[in-house]
Amino acid sequence: MIYGIFSDPHSNLEGLEAALEECKRAGAEKLICCGDIVGYNADPDSCVDLVRELGVLCIRGNHERGLQDLEDGKLPPMNPFALEAIRFSFEKIGEKRREWLISLPNQLLVDDIFYVFHGSPRHPDEYIFDIMEAAHALKSMAHDYPPPGNRLCFIGHTHVCAAYAFDPEKMKVEGWEVAEDRTLRLKPGHHYMFNVGSCGQYRGGKPVSSVVFFDSERMTVSFRLLSYDVEKTQRKVLQSGLPPYLALRLGEGR
Image: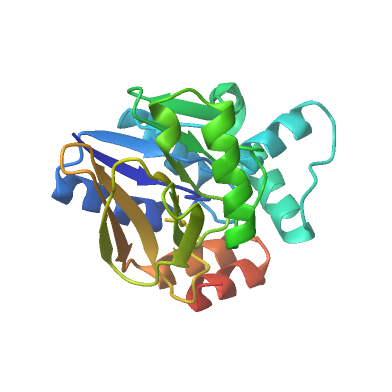
């Protein structure tokens, strides 16, 4: 089976549509989102409706948990730009969409083959930026989650595509940022964690939308960095009254 896996749409309808179109082109049979459907950009309602319409398997990200905080009368632990955007999303999506987003799980085991997390296996809001953090996360995967699903997981949260692998023979974790389209073949006995980046606010230095495909028969993971109408998304952000910085960073991929 081919799984299409993406993360962090962040209310960017054009970026999300680009990822979904690539999933269709690649023949993905099951679609999965690693969280943060809302936040930052201007189309939270349309993004929620689209993933629900297509039956995408979704988990909560920290922005969905931010919705829960606002619902409970608490201030989400976010920077000022993120906080303003999540308040915008809270109002625009309405009660029924909020209820659905808040009800999503924090993690998911897909077909007993692999896990999906937002931040890491250790904590849903943990950022994985380097080898040391990845090593601790992979250790958690191996010890805290049952096989066979604990050999493979997909995450988001950092908005940058990356790959991490534990080699049981060398007893070593390797990792690298993925900056272009790339296909990797999984080796038996290894543990893997792949960051699928972001289809809504990529931060790897390029104004792109990212999506990853896992082929469970060929045991390959393929990264795709996609062009989309960034300027259209930027105009929507500016017209919505959201902070102009959120539009600027889209064009710079940061």
